[in-house]
Figure 1 (cartoon, helix red, strand yellow):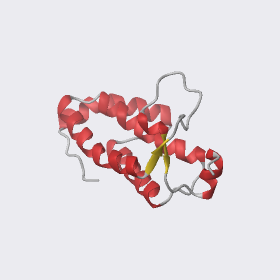
Figure 2 (cartoon, helix red, strand yellow):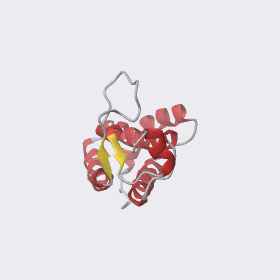
Figure 3 (cartoon, one colour):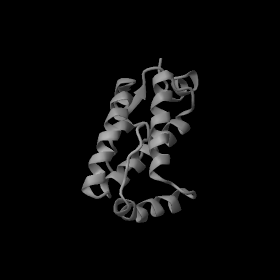
Figure 4 (spheres, one colour):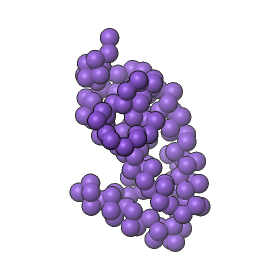
Length: 133
């Protein structure tokens, strides 16, 4: 993913959001780290995702974090993030197929579209976890 150039002002505006997310995660989250993790995950899904459903949902949660950052960004940064994420979201969409139900059931609030996508090429463990034929 191309690095997103953010101004000092944008960085300061993101600091409270990233600090809050970091406290909840129990480790420091940065925008570059989150972007790298989404890119890496999408690449893995494209090649054939060979992890468990637990790891899959954990990896998908990175996209939720990126959405929180995007939603809480100043407009100029939001547009940069949307542009950067669009490429990887499209790649994720192409390398997955729609699922009738969320891969993370039991959530009370509405979930984003990525929770309703499963890899076209799941490994045996994920395939078994998802009970796919």
